[in-house]
Image (cartoon, rainbow, N blue to C red; front, side, top):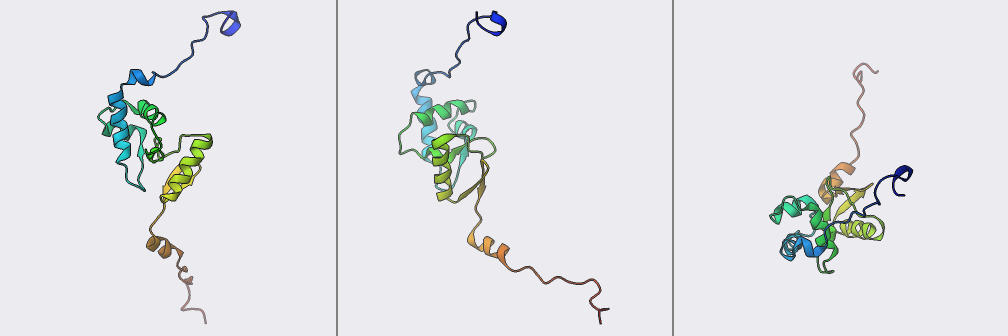
Length: 138
């Protein structure tokens, strides 16, 4: 008696294709692109897949990062809209690493920190308020 009201088939557990079915060549293509992401930059899963020559392989990018070693800068790959998609400890580690590379996180979205010159310009004191009728004030 499976499903709603005791009818239906037994539930099928969905699981993505095992790494062996994805193909080692494709996994290495993804990892090679991730290795070339410079410090301070990020790419989305879809951008990595497209750059590797597999434009429909965004989900496989995730699997390639899971099976990779610690030498791979996996934290520079984020979700669509520059969102941190990982949860729990891996998500916190990704946020920490990205902040160390100059990113600020608001909610789950990445915001690029400005250069020091731009930040100083925005912090200058505002201009004195002007009165509309300053000449009539007497």
